[in-house]
Image (cartoon, rainbow, N blue to C red; front, top):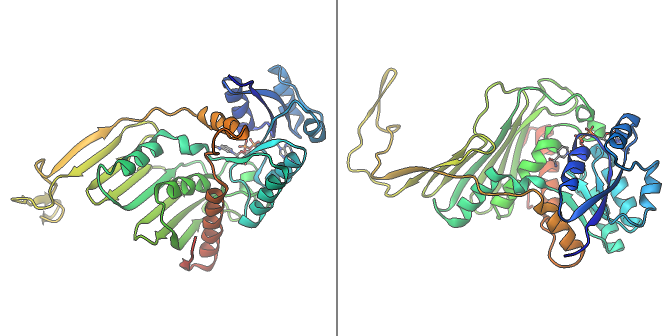
Length: 350
Ligand code: NAD
């Protein structure tokens, strides 16, 4: 059993404090302390018995710190990441790692120079609904993928903090979009050939409070990624069309519902009566050709992120989050902004 690695958190806000709790419960890392520019957050940490560094320089000079966790607003990720790598620390940076692929390249260059591990906290790869969809695709249970739709809907607008401001890296493409796009690219391995995106500005003129993103892949699969913060009724979290059936998920932890087709042709189609007419096209299938069932949520442990990171930092396994994957997501987001601004479909090779 290796010694626990020590993590220092920069930015002890909502997400920094979440990491603090999760580090305290970890079997592979322990908390060295925190640094935050707001005195009230420092006071909160002290009240929990957590060490508070007086400056970032003091934290960076602490030789007992193995990992710096950057959980500040998005516009300071690069600065803290590069400084931490230069001071010989491994770095976990919160998502979105940066606002452009070019800025991310600078961070990767600093990591290569330092020889330290630099990873991005794409924790939603451990979401059980996402894992259910991934395992269904991998098992081939309902055949090849035709289209995947991934949505999150809320009705509270953008939280009233730095997320409202463009210069801080605000808006929903960068906030939730980065998670959903990262998941989507894990589900569909093909090259991306085209992107079309529209953004909404219902509650905020400066940054997007929602978006509708279409991604087209070289192998013919298409994806829809959508975030809404003015949706008083929510659509399903995942909806997937496959050659041999369909899948739908609703609540974060609910089972996925699957309809698996046994044969395409039915002996007799009974027309269904609709409000003002009949239809055979939309008539439900019979249970000879179609089977419907639930797939339970798989077990998932968020601590696996730090387990993988510490093993990768010791050279014992590969990092679960690869730089090339993170870079692809950044390029999709950059193109989504371009498409929304020009109101155009953009051809790409990503
Ligand atoms: P927040 O506003 O709650 O917290 C940010 C904290 O950083 C505040 O305490 C603030 O005082 C501090 N801070 C601001 N500028 C600083 C600076 N220059 N130096 C040091 N401290 C500074 O924001 P949050 O919701 O915790 O988000 C922080 C980061 O975490 C963002 O990048 C966000 O996208 C990410 N995040 C990730 C997830 C996830 O699921 N992976 C969830 C929420 C937030």
